[in-house]
Length: 403
Image (cartoon, rainbow, N blue to C red):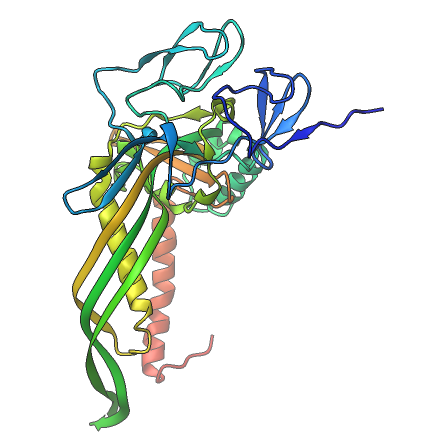
């Protein structure tokens, strides 16, 4: 008789900060990608981590600060979004919560470690006053095999124009699961917009010579919009190099193209979920990305205002836009991505790192494949050689040609 794994729901239970099995107390825990559960290697118990604290009304040790800024905005900053202290360096000493041993972790290489005495996973939750440890994370949902299949399918569709050397060297064996650091914000705002909007009153045709032109009579109105807006789960890269999206230098923008993530399903940071994956440490403070938050919140508010003015079919122009943030919550998160990388060595001595990325929650895949420029040029010339004569014939025969 085979004993089935026992399932325990710890979502509503008290979390003492130890990454141990709730059934037998073992620290030998591994991740089940499907469903985001954890399983004990000793008693085979399957369990969930406790839920993340609500971002709207956080409480307890999770809050680093609660203040009002110069604009009157109430700012809640979780401990994971604290400013990074450059004097602390990457070497961090952690006291094991299981047995009291001290373990040194190089956070430039990993954001978790295992105690060499009791085997407890040390995930830095109660250390790191410099805020580099995230508040929450999303576990991997897609397996490595699923990610490899998605990457192979993506590349297969683009092999015709791909670089010959890339096609010879392409293999998904080096695909890595990576937790990337992000800021996550939730905010309540009050928005006021004023401007002009046009509505088509009459449409008619005017004959000018041998041609006919369509003319419009448009009624113009002054309009105003006043509304409250709640924005949840807005994300920004917390690694400075990832915000550099200059296409001639890198292919970082590919990471943005696999968004969004299901932020509403985040769980509290737990080092057990990092086993078997790599992770990057945050190197950016809140002040450095505030302008990005303001810009995106403004764009979202404008989009909502435009949606209320859809009846004005001749367009809308806003003269004044006011977005007043009443409250904002800053958190940091680890979001899961499967990454394939390929370093293209160019003839001018420069290198370009190409990525194919898979959202490990949704399966959305996007990437960059090095192009064979000679083949691309030849195909372009062939297309042009065919298109030009056809265009001439269409002009001669009044726009219609059979072939």
